[in-house]
Image (cartoon, rainbow, N blue to C red; front, side, top):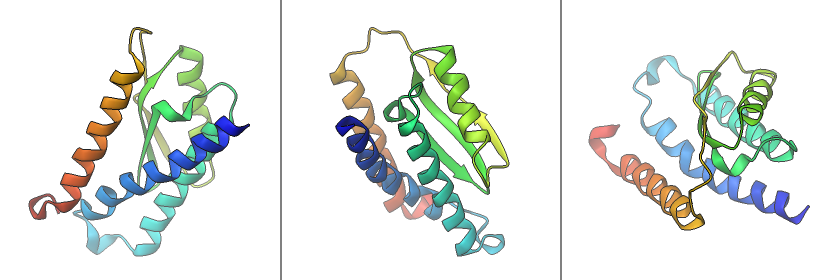
Length: 136
């Protein structure tokens, strides 16, 4: 139970980092309202919570991007069953119009250090993109 709470807390931080490029990189701002952006952020948060609560999926390894009610799942999972279940959870979530399931089944030869380095790199790239005036 404590692990699930930790996953949800980490997910909230991850979503915060992921939401900045979504809003900053939106080139179609004239057609998107703040409400639509908030709706997408809500979908991402509800999906991350649902993935964390599901006994089959490991929410830590699944990155979520949402744009205009279209969900994109990226990252690594341990099995085809986990990949399928994550896509099913996303598609059944209220407000989701479409799901692009880009989850890859990982080999088990990645160390915790390699995984941590990947997450750190993703965070740094997102932060740099959010601060780059050309990327806006």
